[in-house]
Figure 1 (cartoon, protein in one colour):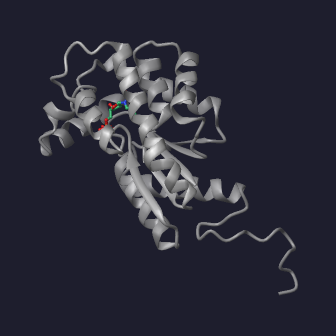
Figure 2 (cartoon, rainbow, N blue to C red; figure 1 turned 120 degrees about the vertical axis):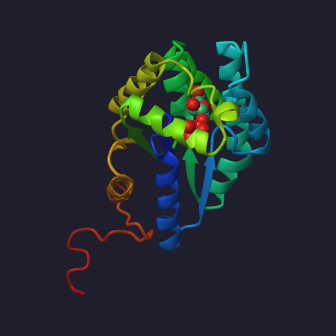
Length: 230
Ligand code: TYD
């Protein structure tokens, strides 16, 4: 099973990802938590270029291809082998980030980006995407506090310092993507307190599994009437 976590900065994706990983592990699943950019060795090098606030004069196209290079290597080296080994993969950002940031945010053509995502991943799509949605000001404030506390303003602050308009376009882009694919993308109200956010994530996961006739511990849900005589 492949699950991605998406949303603007400061939406609380990472906390929720850790919570779901613990929940799934406690139900007997073998989980791999990873992220983009930076889920493999090549990606960690690319991450430092892509997110460093001191990176200047990176063209929109160069930025795009660096994210795609990270993704291509990450899928080949980490995600696909883990899925083939039967692990549950939880990925902090994936293809929708490119559509939201480079597409809706930077204005690059969405269909072109879809084709490039397809080429980079060999068509590997998450079966469930949790979209953490919250007002842009609120997310940026949280991300700013976190980066200050962790001393990451310079080394990871390039996107955080984009305009409010940019982040608003990204947020609306994500919502449009969720509307297009409601079976895959579940919207989580990330403005709620963390304990409520994790419960929403759990419900979305359970609903997704239920639709596939499965429960959280991996067992099949009996068809109606199947266990009547037990
Ligand atoms: P990250 O620290 O992972 O995000 P967050 O602050 O939400 O924890 O930063 C990754 C940044 O890279 C984020 O601003 C979104 C951006 N990004 C893209 O623009 N395109 C992409 O394809 C990906 C994967 C990320």
